[in-house]
Structures are given as C-alpha cells and as structure tokens.
Image (cartoon, rainbow, N blue to C red; front, side, top):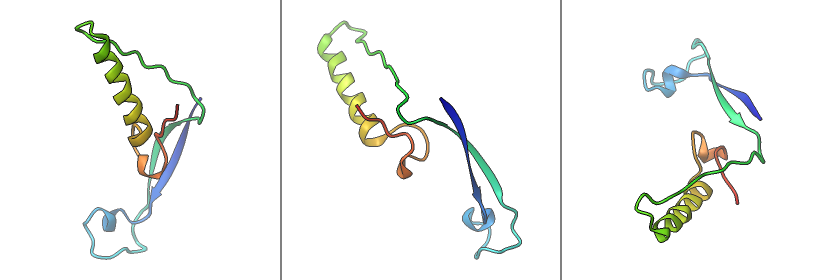
Length: 85
C-alpha cells in the first residue's frame, strides 16, 4: 500500500545557502514524498544475458547486499528504503 508523507523545510533560504542565519520571516516549503508500507513484498527478476548462471547468482547476491545495506530511493539515512530478506 502506498501513502504520502510530508516534511516541511522551515528555513529554506538558510539551508539552501542563501542566508547566513535562519529567520522567522521565511516561508516554509512543504515537501511531499511517497512511501510504501512496511512489509510490502517486492519481486526482482535477475538473469544473465550470457546465460552464465554464476553471473546471475552473483547479481542476486549483490542486489540483496545493496538493498539490505544501502536501501533504495530517497531518505535511506533515516530509515526509508530499507529492505530485509
């Protein structure tokens, strides 16, 4: 199931490097992004174009590592985009 989240940057000029200090006169900018519910199942198909099964097996190994250790998409540093399994 998909849902939407919203975060608001309260000091866009300051965080954008256009102001030397945050000011209360700045207009907040809402930022919306889509999320997928925890437990959503994904299926990835991997095949070797050369037909070598060891290449496909290595690709699956690297894909599992990448998704579980690095995640996918935005905001992985705060827990979004993490895969298990």
